Image 1 (cartoon, rainbow, N blue to C red):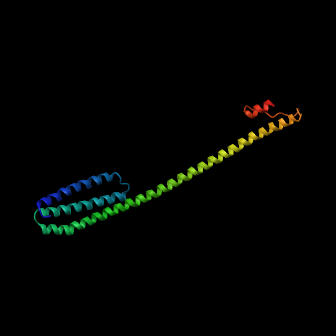
Image 2: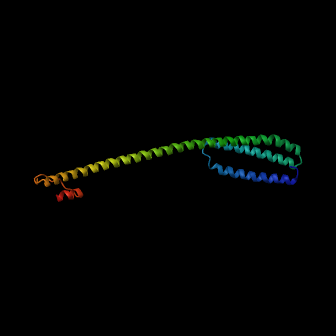
Image 3: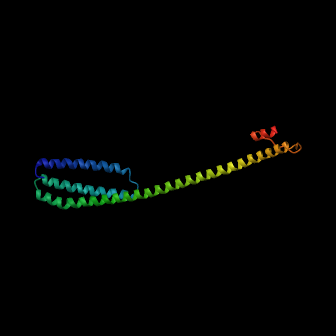
Length: 178
C-alpha cells in the first residue's frame, strides 16, 4: 500500500479483524471440552498474537515510509506467523473433528441400544399379552364347554348330574340359568 489512505484502511481492517477474532475466541472458550483442546486453543492464541504483531510491525514500517523493510516483514515474518497460526488452527479443527466423530459413534451406539431395548420391550409385551389372552380364553372356553355339556345332558333328559359352579360373569349367569 502506497498512500496514507490505503495504510489507514489496512489499520482499520486489522483492528476490526482483531476484535472479531477476540470475540470468536471468547465465544469458543465456553465450548472447550478437553485439556488437549485447551492446550491447542492456547497455542493458536499465541500464534494469532504473533501474526498480529508481525502485521502491525509491517504496517508501522510502511507508515514510516520504510517500504523495503515493510515488504521484507510481509514476505518473511508475516508469512511465517500466518503459517504458524494456520497450523495451530488446523490442529484445533482436527481435534474437534475427531471429537465430533467420537460423539457421532457414541450417539449411534446409544440410539441402536435404545432401538433394541424398545424392540425387546415391545416383543415381551406382545408375548405377555398373548399368553394372558390365551390363558383367559382357555378358562372361558372351558367353562362354556361345561355349560354346553350340562345343557346337552339336561336336553337328553338327565336331570341328576352336577351343574357347573357359577360365577358373576356372563358364563356364571348362563350357568345359573340352566
